[in-house]
Image (cartoon, rainbow, N blue to C red):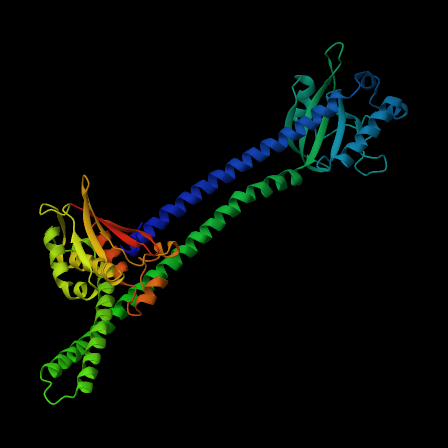
Length: 446
């Protein structure tokens, strides 16, 4: 997308991007929250099921749920195993076995040492039992999860029924508790990834918006400055050139040295004037819009012949032939702004001649496509290195080998060509091999 239309469109474009990123980021965060929550709960349930699978039901059947269990070898063995589980898995805080009698849930055994303040002795009633806890016994519920707050804190609990292997009767319920803070911390850590990623991308977008906006302001200022400066310079330069011409024509009494010096000043003034014109062309092209172009049918063969006639002296000086292919027939017509199209092709022809070897040939041809003509300007000159081919259409860039041919040039000629081609809904590109020549292609609508 081009950012030279208006700040309103520019802002609208970024608003769409930011809104899309916010929506995607929010969906990713919600999805992550749900998946991590499910994963953590499923892991806790699997841990509970794994522990329950190795419990010996005969030992549990021998429990009475009172202080006499403390002397039961089965109780002592199970107590020892439960105490080791939180040491092995740091995410598990409590493991316990419940029984049910007199409408109360009570403890058979838990994972706390007898010396711990959190220890629950056999037969201690669990007064904070929830409806889900009781229904595990009353309604024979399958393994389930619950979030519960009791005297010890807030817990994510995985509850698993323990049944007699021979009768299938429910004899106890085993619980595995994870601290709610650990549970939510795990979720928040993973959910923070899409949240932070979204914030980071938004920061990049906003910074890009600010930098791009300032770049546009700078380019507009630069264009205005170049335009003003060029206008102020062009008038006196043109005057100097005319004066030098007049002196040379009326050069009676001038010595050969004086004529040489005047001619040198004239040539340098003309070179500088060309540079100023390039700067003005670039400034004008940046301000142009498609609506401002004065389009008319252009017969390309006639246009090319005009450019060839204008280049007669340079062609003769370097003994270069300019061949216009038969594919550029009288019926090859495009729609465009004549002055700017002529200037665009003149830049391409001029470059082809300038960087061709003496005695070379510049060939111009056309490819007839369905809705476009593609014009090719092929030379046998110095070519362009691969590393420079992607840069040559930038403003103020000149290839290294071009600088060796001539130090004159602003690097704006091809930049102007690209701007004008794109303003006419066309494009320009180049194919080149260093030392073997270049072919510049311009695609323009019929």
